[in-house]
Image 1: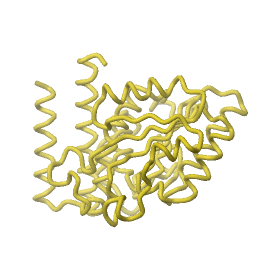
Image 2: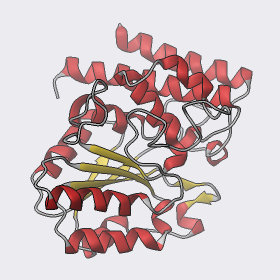
Image 3: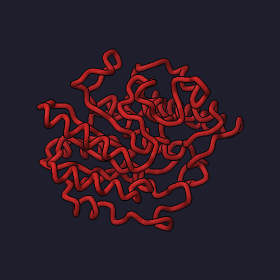
Length: 279
């Protein structure tokens, strides 16, 4: 990837992380850990990969994104704000009664949200339906869905995986955010989904691995996904809480909001990181 472009994406990702912290802090609740681990992925998708437009969010030919791990909506909202779907000020109203940005994505109430989600395990099935619709109607759009590594302990995920392979849905990409932690602790201790790559391969998927925080590696993975004759599973190794030192790899930040002191520390760290990127 061009060095200047990578720098621009890194700056956007830093702003997306700041939006996550802003939203969860003002909500006094939410899920910062898993939101922070997908900020680089979402930044790449919305600013480099997806055929989408904030000016025409319902374009029938747009690419679709399903955030299957819907509790990480703060990251999706933040990247949508950066992309221009709505004002960044909306992030401060996260989870407030009557606000546009609820605790989980709402396709009827939020511009840019393609699927309501939050009941874990269901997003991949919805993505399969979207991808099949494109095939049946000779549409060129692609469907991307983001799942958590704890989420794929759900059996419905594997029914959908079988369906996608059977129907040769090579127009869809599932990204598993393998940050190693879920609400009750390490995924390997709760109900290990490993080996994740072997499981998707056994279901007939083309499997690619990538570093979730390296834009060169992210670009490589998605370029490979473009040429697949089968549905693609990208397993990204990520750091839960990435970008905020005291949240990184700390399961207690799966579903907790920072207090005022923690908010200021987190925002200062991210601002310093942004300043470094801006030179």
